[in-house]
Length: 105
Image (tube, rainbow, N blue to C red):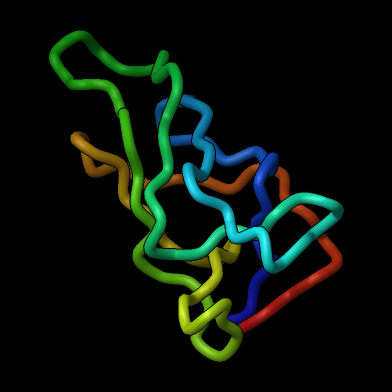
């Protein structure tokens, strides 16, 4: 499934409203002057405000579905149509605002 590539600095949030950012972006691919993100690298989630006190807040996230045909050193890239799971709660990451010039499958 094609989608826009997600770069460092894109607005990506957990389902509760916490801001997610890649920990190790790929410096070999630049999108709007920012490095692209690859699927296997973990993301951190800062602030997870919209949850009840009985549910642990999102701390990290892992993309599990990205590009299938375009890779960086054999690693799939993160796209806005991909899928990610937050830990420890298991909620998804939601791309809100990304670059809109480069798509990949």
